[in-house]
Length: 453
Ligand code: IMP
Ligand code: MG
Image (cartoon, rainbow, N blue to C red):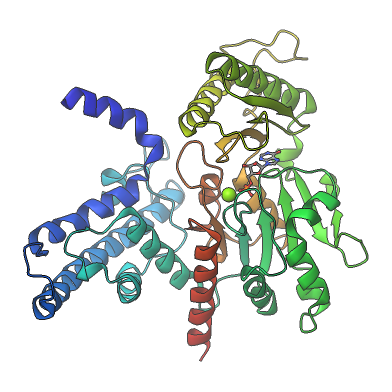
């Protein structure tokens, strides 16, 4: 039993967020000790006493975690400056924080997280402390973390908000229609001089296709009577994770104009050669074909200039979730092995390994993810996409910093999810539906208003 459990756990870590699971485990202790599942239904007085005690204990735990994160941030800073002014020789491995030892996958943190206050806020909405049968859950903790992050970036810090498209702004595969409740909230951010980047995996080469998906927002910006020109120009679309940049353009029929790559590629991105990109996509395509064949998937291959994927071979068909996940993990593994030189590419000019290129050059980053109905492998990932937005909206060549950026998305599992990569360049909020995005934006607006007054 133990062995089976271990094997399953080991194989499924890609479906768990270890930081959230760890906090959930801490909250389970007071739940087990103080919840009163045997109480008589309707005995409001005893539930109230239990809820008060549980609230106090949950809040204490959140405060302790908050302090552990503070300590982690101090050590993060020390490690960053190691060898410069601390006197610690740079060849020594940085010492982990206590949090780093308990949750090795945690971090980096761009801001401190007021978890106690965030817990109290969410408990007023979700009444977690009043529950007698259901312990604080993954979603409870996820929403507490979102509130804490929202609290941390308000009060003047937020300069750039980036949003994923599918599931975050609109339902999977749908478009941002004029009636969407998210639109007035996005306009409100622009009105507050916050820049907006839509950082989506959807990879199109022309403005009309993005207009098709985002027309509700683009038309609302264009016709808004109370946004000035600079505020309207504070909206960009970054498509294909980090491959196509479109800026707001009032004179275009599609309200968008493509920005030539030479104007926004970072020096590192500019070094990715077309031959290496093609070679990476060739390997990914052949791995995808193998998956379609071996698992008999009802899927068709889609090859683009910066991506390759599988989609259902007929509208209405669904590929099983397990098959999509397996495909992501297989393709990712094969591409990683290619990076390491396991599959030499004799035809690649000047390169013996995929993406390796010349001596010391890092391989081209890619993002293999499960889109819910499809699997795509894109060149680059959202860490590059968000970083380009930070650069684009930066002033005098200085990019907007991670602590001044918030990326909102639905895909934050470590493997097979594309928003996860944005965590390395800015703060993030993990939502589960467009309705949650609306709630998050309302929370953000409320806090901004309160801190202003
Ligand atoms: P996101 O949630 O906005 O990042 O969009 C992800 C979805 O965009 C995927 O699930 C695909 O259905 C769709 N998509 C369309 N073109 C591409 C592409 O070139 N790469 C990745 N995803 C794509
Ligand atoms: Mg999404």
